[in-house]
Image (cartoon, rainbow, N blue to C red):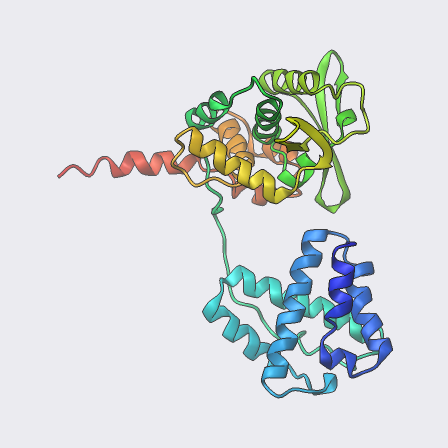
Length: 318
């Protein structure tokens, strides 16, 4: 949030600033006080900035002049250039922002309230999923004679075997890896303030032990578990590993392992869920392990039908 505060302070839209300091403060408070998730905050801030820029470009110079048809026209135009989920997210951001402004008596009505978003039905997620053999190939290809190799294998293994989101993984402290009932467990602080604990798969247990011992982190319970790495000193820096750096690391590791599937941070979560279900796991348990509020979300990660489809396609013999 500290990085976003000066950005918002400098970029209060002219339509908001023209209403006076009270309106500017209310706009600013929406992002700093009302929204807790940093990813949502960035996305909503981008949506607001782009919409108000669009209004100015179309001659709307007063907040009170914004009508539902302005919002509808913006969303209609946005759909032609961007995906339906993006348009839905932008509309949701505008609805929440204008609700906040109405409650604060800055605006009389919410011009986005009556606008319907694009229809978008998702039955299968788009996240690329690795075959179990590919996941094993990637993990085995990592050189674990170095600290960074131990770190990278532990991070990827954590996402595969505990279905952890990358944000929860890189936010862990050393003390979030602990022993209970003679088994290693991990504690994940997921989005929405949800705390989630999972016992470790025996492979993950080995990866974490080797990494923590090799990096000398066992005596630093409050230290970040996954830290950035200095190639100059060949040591961990104590600083957090940025999500973008984790993504770049995954790209390098996949390329080095000759993995042709396009992977991302979320790939390993989906890979773990699919492998679990393929081996007889239940959807309900998978949802619980992934900390999903609904099995409908978990179903987006279930790619078991893809192998069936491939088998069927091979029956076309010409």
